[in-house]
Image (cartoon, rainbow, N blue to C red; front, side, top):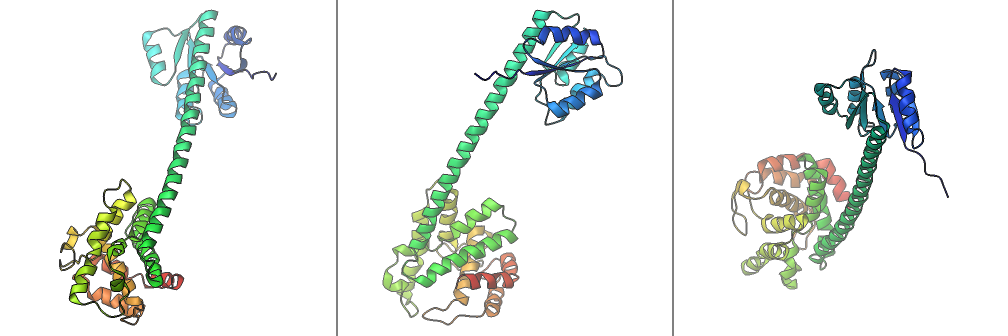
Length: 346
């Protein structure tokens, strides 16, 4: 059977007799190291990190208070218990010791049973605290892993849901991938956090999810829609919002907002609610620009594709009417990056 390693105690005192007394009390149960000055103690603590420190206060050059303060100021050693062992027995001395981080205070001359009991108590508390920290770390990692698994499953479901609205048209399947890439690019330029931007880019893929509820012959019609057909087509915004609302998922909550508002216009002439200006949620305002740009640069049964340059000119032209001027200005400067996205998803 493997022998359990002894816990280590550093005894710090400038008087050899005091070191000898403490060593004799503890040597049977613990591994003892010694230091006869504050500087030597700090060197040993930095190199070996003992389990507990028995520290004299009255030492030349650097007293025990300073040693303790330095130990507690270092994140690598701050959790090592420090017990002052000293002839200073004033209440104020003891109070100062606790104030700077000591866990206990033993006055000289020491009582062997008291020293053994105090040392054992604080080593037990230290071990219990470390066990709890380890258990918490394991639990935190398990929770983190579970969250990652759930998010991966959620993202897969969201991606499939977004593609479901486009399965009738291969070109619009590429459309949602480009929209997501445009939105991610805009999020970067708007200073979104990494997580916030990723959620937004994913949510944007469901901007047209409501088209699931639109008849096939309208989705695939090669000509422009009639007024009556257009009224039906516009309901995809409210259908999408109804499909996506009520979820606890942040991504689906954002997707519901985008689905409902990405056809609203800055001047209040959009649909379905004729929202105006900043009444339109920011995600909807961004997707509105991205969606229009992609429609312009894409070939449709009823139109030829526009060049990137002409499409960006049109975005600029509609700034302040269809689009948020600030967002339109940012988008208009992204030509090279937009070209890369179009080359990737074509």
